[in-house]
Length: 561
Image (cartoon, rainbow, N blue to C red; front, side, top):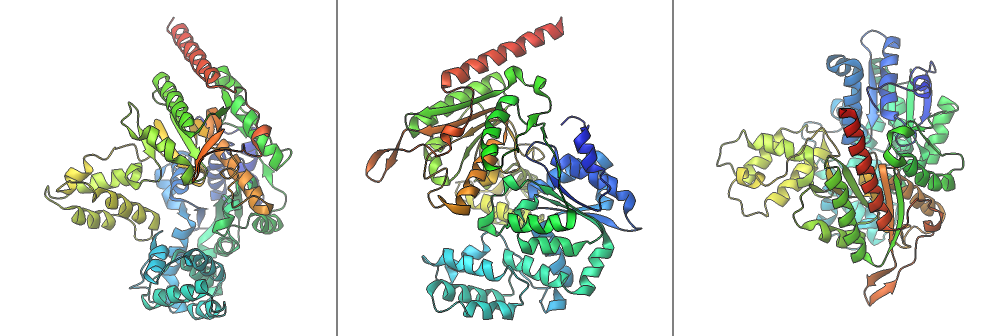
């Protein structure tokens, strides 16, 4: 959206006088802009010395909202009057500030990273019971239990291997004065349920904004509601709910929020996607929720109306080769374009990674590698530049970690992962090792070039072109999620992948695949036939690229005249 000029429906949402508002905002409808303007609108309703709390799920979403708020309010005013945190970051703040109230030894408390629980499992013996043990721990810790109550609940799970492993891991955690991510939320919930603690936050925050409400667990919802009672705004889209495996409870959360906020305000105009992309996205969203279609807010802005295609290809090697050709053609004509290649599950990307492994005339970023993360690369490079020339990688790692907020577990995890990769190089010093890291603008989450990622990593992002790969049974939907509520969530996963696209959207499937016993006939996804797309062959997509390139040249020439 240009210059944050809101539409009529966006202005109505941002300036609503309702104290408690539920905003249903599908992808590309300007949710972040509306939240920023709603925050600005609510500043006048605050008591003296109060602030607004904005809660997001990810570090990237937090940065996006902070950027919008600074654009609307100015940097100084936004930082002074609005606190933006992701949920785990807010929970960390609550625990560090008030943990002594529930008996925590805050001074030596070890905060978690993403890998903390998995490493604890491995240290406790690991094995095939790890996955089930993690589920048991997560389920038990979704309530406001004390450490002693957690152990008691785990011991009541019986003598099974997974339950015994969970007990062993929890005992070791408590003895080490360490927290796992689930403990942050559990203790924050416990603390905010203490009336004296809750009153401190409710007096400090005159309004709370919660982004992506459909991804909340009931525990996270409780934390948000306890932090502020004056004014609440929940924004998101139930059709984007794809995190039930991580504890999200979209139906239950929406029911509670509706009781607080009443009927939702809905946005219907997409500023992200071209008409052709929306045609494809709508063909899936209507199957999930009839009446949920979006319209293009500015259809005249898209050359040729955009592009959509559904390509059935011979096999995965042919698919990878065609992706390589199409991505190359897009970036040759438009070097500053972003191309997202999105898979559902990691096992489906081997041929694609192989195709893009060699050096290319355009950037290729793998989102599963921390050494490709722009923010992490920028932090490492800037820190290493201040160290003595002979500084080792070990010294550099410590210096970079010292520069990271101790409460930012995500950033610390990325730094650790990046140095794990750098240490595999033959470089003798930190400066030599980081010289090969590709720098990119850390403020630009999605830069020019090709981006290789999965469905959950890509949520909240947008690309000029998107290729959704592998619409075959067993991949989309995943073979473990082929019925009931799990199947419905798989369909929402597909919708999330499709809705990342701006100008062009291409979905692919392979006729054959390689298995343990050789090639076999793949079965097209049950949703394949319902996907509406303009083109069905690579040649038509290439022709569209040529036509739009000629149109851009014609417009450029006419403007010069």
